[in-house]
Image (cartoon, rainbow, N blue to C red; front, side, top):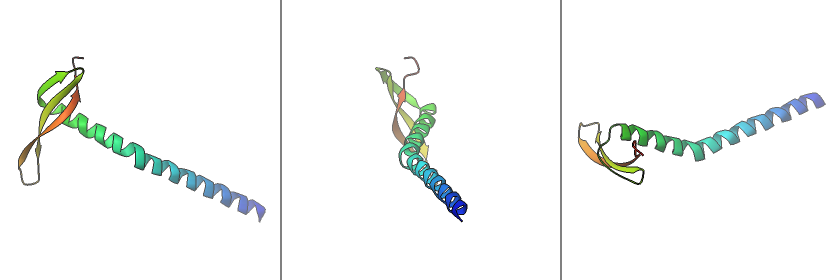
Length: 81
């Protein structure tokens, strides 16, 4: 019986540790990654850039479900810096 209790405790600790890592990833890292990926995607489609000090202020077009085009701003890394 003691062995079964010890194995159960180890399993519970492992499940709690995995849940903690997933919570950390979801709460802290995922928003940063999502923002970075979105920014890079928009920077690859950017035009009309004005670059200063290694950063470029650019424009990109976003098309919604109705086909309406909206021009938005995005800050990108200067590829020439």
